Structure formats: structure tokens, C-alpha cells
Length: 258
Image 1 (tube, rainbow, N blue to C red):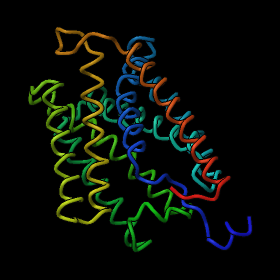
Image 2: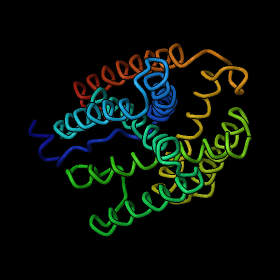
Image 3: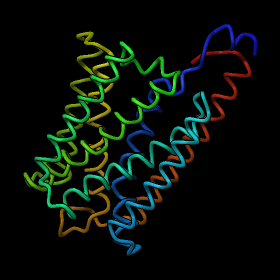
């Protein structure tokens, strides 16, 4: 404990590793299919589903803030819930309020940009390696919410409004992520900018992939349904979180860093 105190406050979010991106992609995929499952298959409707999931999200994010450190189960539960709610926010704007996908995409781009601006003006950094105060964590989660809402709008815009289809849309955003990774590793572009760009584009990639798996063939999907798709990805997320927790416990016991 003395060593931890000397080292300063702990970062409350995970290191960016391969398993980080893997579980993040699964979380955004599940967010898309789970929102459809709750609203349509369970018959809750879009409005009731949005209210219930927002309440659950507030509770889960509150639990995450209470940790004051990175705890895999609490952190990734928050990511999954924000993924679901981010999808529902965009769906509500489109279906209940008649806001076009173009307008939603522009709005959430501006909102995300304003969040980053406010974060930088108050904290002088956008680094994800120093999230150790409530204010920084607040900006972090707000940015993530807007990335999910923006990614949902952009993915639906390309796949449905522009009629590229789910598979082509997923490949387009995958190509963008590969280009960002190449720019980071080869051209040495700013790591913070590369991270957030990749984070934004994994949302429409995962959402398009989720729709490809779950939607019926007449809509361009493979017809596995939202139930099986959602629970398959939820199971995979749980297994990875169990692995992350065991790995973190082992490293803390041995005093090793990743």
C-alpha cells in the first residue's frame, strides 16, 4: 500500500492493449443488437427501453466512479451500457423525433468536439493515461457516450441511407481503422488523436457487424437474430473480463506492470 501511495493516484481506465480493442469491439457490437432486442423482441418499445437502460447506466457509471481505480468488471459494464444507451439516443432522434441521420451525425460530431475542447481547456490534456480525478473521468465518459451515438448515426447513414449495406459499411470503417493504425505506427501521428479516431470508428464497425449477423436476409443480414447475437457477444465479453480480472490480480500480486 505504501508503494501505491508513493506512486500517486491510479488511472481509472485500462491500458490500450489488444484485449482492450477486442472487448471494445464486442461491446459496441452487442450494444447495437441488445438495443434492438430489448426494444423490439421483448416488446418494450424504444421509449421504455431508453428510460430503463438510462437508469441502469446511471447506476453502473456511479459504481465505476466509486472505484477510484480501474476495475475490469465495473469499467466494461459501463462501456456495454453506454454502448446500448448511445444506440438508443440516436434511434430516438431518428424514429421518435424524425431527425435525419445526416443531422444526427453532424450534431454528435460537434458535441464530441465541444467535449474534447472543454476537456482540454480545463485539464490541458486529453490523455487517457491520467484519468485520476472525477472531472477527468466525467469528460472521459461523456466523450465515450458521444462516440457511441456518433458511430451509430454514421454507421446507419452509410449502411442504410447511402445503401452500402452492412458488410460493405463494416469493411469501410475497418479500412479507416487500419489506416489510423498505420498512421500511428509508421508515420508516428499523435497517439491521443489516433486513439480517439479509432475509438469513434470501432463503433460503426461493430454496429454494422452486429446488424450483419442479426438482421434477416431480406434486409441484408445473415439472420442469426438479435437474441443469439447479443448473448453470444455478452458471453465472450464476460469471459474476457474474467481473464482481465485474473491477469490484473496476478500483476498486482507480483508487482509487475503490463
